[in-house]
Amino acid sequence: MSLQQIVSETVTGLGYDLVEIERSAGGLLRITIDLPWRADVQDEQFVTVEDCEKVTRQLQFALEVDGVDYQRLEVSSPGIDRPLRHEQDFQRFAGQLIDLTLKAPIGDAAVGLVHANRKKFRGMLERNADNTGWQIVWSDEPAPKPGQRVSRKRTPPPQQVLGFALDELREARLAPVVDFKGRKPRGSA
Image (cartoon, rainbow, N blue to C red; front, side, top):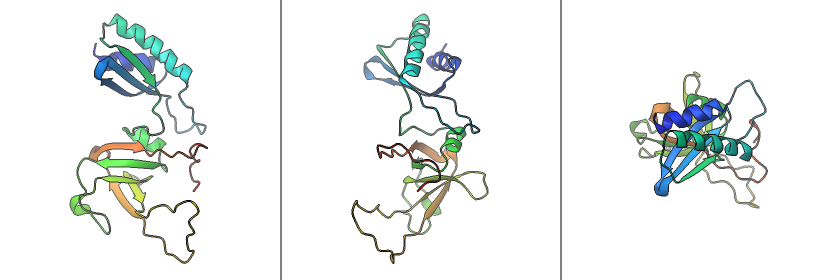
């Protein structure tokens, strides 16, 4: 059995989702888990230390039985900058601030103020107008500094929109929003 199969079967058997498996130098095996997400449940649950401990203990037994070579096992939650890989991840975090990196520059699709060689974007994740794909909405204006007065007469810069397909992405992650009060609920500014 491959490492991917062993870890996947063990993690899903315990009722968790496998987010990522990473092997690092020095024999580190890093496993990232998450609780299953359902669209009909409003109160989101998060991975606890006890969850990580439970998965670690079970994985230690499973990896030892199959003779997988590793020096150190680390099981953790996805964190505040979690990767978005599957359609379900995009559905779950629609309306959130994300960092997006394309595999190739946008090229001829560049419209308006967007440079044709640009591959990295930070903005709000949304469904596109016909509800068949995804788009990111952003403004390149820097955020005002704390205490800075902003004139009410000033016109805001235009919002820019870029539609994308999941196979065009090199990487997508939640943008770390650290305000020490947690992420704001969806729909709040």
